[in-house]
Image: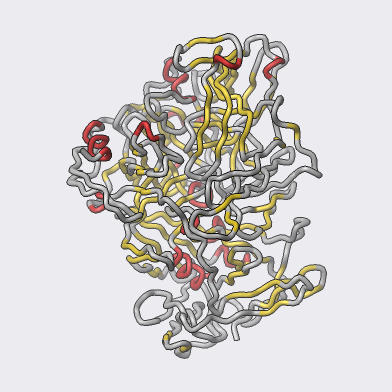
Length: 636
């Protein structure tokens, strides 16, 4: 019998499933969307962990580890990883400015101000500086689908040995090694259970299981309305002796194959009733909150919509072990059903194509499965949808950056809209932008004095599946029920809120299989969906349409034009998008390479890729640095 069918039957999914041979395999199913019928259970004592931003892109949590000499560490929030891991000082040295090579999942090189410069074609940890410099070494890999060097495989030849913070086992008399088989402390590192895991963001770590005393400072666990320390003795974690990231993990992901996670200890301690959490990451100044065991209704607006976890099928066994037949429903995966844009000035909206393409071999129709990740700076979406977004924002692709650039002033002009069935999530343009800087962290500006920003959206063909990072997570309220394998999302309430203790009347418990106030989604087609990990990925040719520019080594810039295979932005005969987010300077129909495009009176979009004209946010724009023109981004 098909192993995927066995898995789904055993997990009561009521599926009649088959896996197709295509890399975008889908599960054929009669599953209905999850319904909820419980009554919300109000509470006032949910443990609330206050997260601190590391720059503006990722979040950490401060924990006290050890005995005698207490160690203050700040591992990174990680919603994929169920494990807490800390970098062992015996294998990692503290980073210095000279050894720092900070980078993000699209190789963003970080300065102390967390302003990030993109370098071409790398995928590394989404780590930026907090109080000290963070680093990750360059991951050199060889792609199985290309003879050229690529960073999209798993054959790592370089391991990070520089860390922004390290754990000293010898400083605690309570530290010891741990066997997950015997479920007890063991003598000697050789008797401790070995650990290795790679996540779907390609972050990996290896080491041994250990225990030590952990102190978590939390709000809301009693009626004193003040922070309290929760002490756990023999807290199980991983002492990492190798990793491709420079900072440890505060893992709150779903345990795989009967394991436990950080939240399990709060359940065992009777602080909460289920292995669950909700997450609110703030856009504005203020506290980002991880609420264990429930939700706070103050944290979202509109409908909270629930989705069953979409199964992951991994025939490569990179992320899901062979012992599970490469099949797991423990990753936070949900179905994207559409993209669009909305203009703030007018309120007008445009809905993008229902079909998508990665320009190579894979095409499909939404919904498309996407995994969530709190350690990745970017959203990775289908290439054709990215082009539609770039046109609407009048973004320009710069090959030497490996990213799209826009004028930062566009951040207030509207939203990128993501649809999950009848739920619409509106992401402010500003949440998708970060400053474009040179290698010294100096801000690049346009000729008109406006700052240049990097669009935090990249094509997903390098992964082979879609991934939504922190640009998405900071725009949504997320609730996760690990026991029921469900997650719920809503639009974030980004207005300032009071402290957790002042919001106790809005707290409600999550119970197994039930997220309070979450309504059933209206999608039926996603029940047949799975996220399939491809056996190889494609590093396809970069975009070469009219909205491109090259940065030359001598500082001169040439703009490149599209070739004969000009891309039609919306797949409808080359008709351009409406350009709601810009102001047109040429509303005439444009054509090139056999494609004809039209520009709406609302304007702002380049006419069907291959078209040429002075349209969009800028009639003429140049990137400046130190008084020298670095980039001509004008559309001729």
